[in-house]
Amino acid sequence: MNNTRLQHDAAMAMAKAILDVVASCLHPDCHRDAFDEFVAICKAGVESYDIQRERMQKRLRPGRN
Image (cartoon, rainbow, N blue to C red; front, side, top):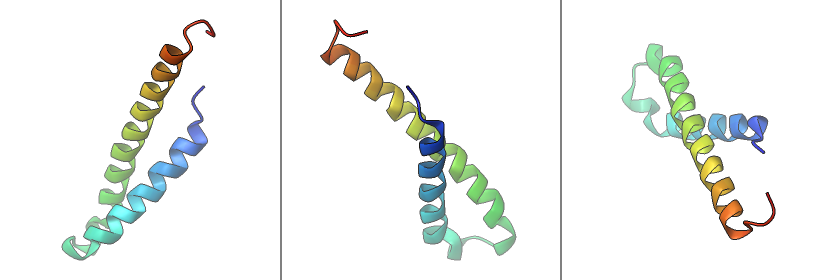
């Protein structure tokens, strides 16, 4: 079962950390747009990880669907 709240929180934390690293390379007016892009990318990564983890769990315990 996906926990969308945890996925969202993780994506937000990762996006903030990434923005903190690259903020000095970006014009301040672009920070919000960059943050929004980072959130979308991180959220997709976390969701993909969660799907793969669930598949692996099912393979490890095939009799417990």
